[in-house]
Image (cartoon, rainbow, N blue to C red; front, side):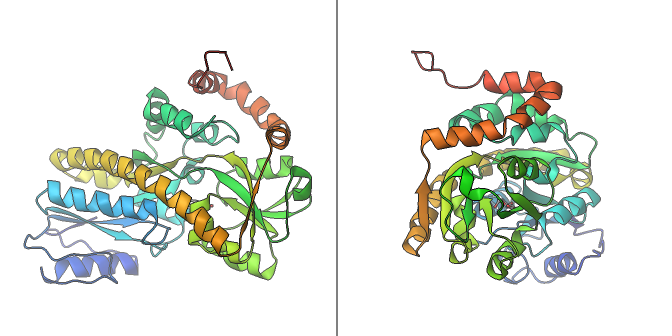
Length: 352
Ligand code: GCU
């Protein structure tokens, strides 16, 4: 956080750059330095927002929407500079910088937060949600709020839930069923245990890598495949190296838009109220953008030569059965939470 009047210094070069931009003229337009826009008002606070996705990706667009809304609602007194493309570091380090107050906001995959909230693990269990609607009933209701509260005292203040669709496997050589994944080296997110446990239970081996390193690892053959949603697969051009996308739809990992608690404590209440409200609005906006992007991403990847491989319900059942040990493990400690999530499943009039 940079408060204009206090002339605080930043240690990290990019953040320092943002501070310098903010302190210069009111009429500067410096796209390389966050996304500062012309303004006739001198902001009281210039805050940084880290994103590891590209500028046109739904979560980054959601961040920019949030920044614009906060600026509008505070009459330009709170300015938020959004840094896309992991310019401020990878997800794990941006969360730590957020705890320290060096970065004020970020949006991360919940898998990056499991060391701060054990309950986060439950929300990303494979095949947990019936569909996207089920997930939103969970996140937008009491369960979502309760899990947000588990971050109390961690240095992180959760603001809103963002959408990240559903993840599936994609590979360099064709895999069209569970048996084909056996023995493959699959990239998993570096921070959480569940993706690692899941891939092992499915018979493949795991390589933990940051998101930005997946393309080159596919290119060199260090890994045989990875798993992600259509939007990330297309945005990061992974289809060029791993053109077989197996639509097993194994997990939905919610994403959290978060804020540094140390920044939150320094801001006047009137600005925090605006921030909370705008964060919620930005999340609704992101969800709309998400749906559109997911469809387009699949179309673009397929047009570029990717093969989308659908899975029969019978085959999906094999995936579900293989990951059952994860449920046995989590049911022992988080049975109540799992029961609450299951209670929000849609039940048809025939009881299915
Ligand atoms: C998704 C998510 C990213 C995350 C990535 C990953 O794309 O939006 O925040 O870094 O998954 O697999 O690491």
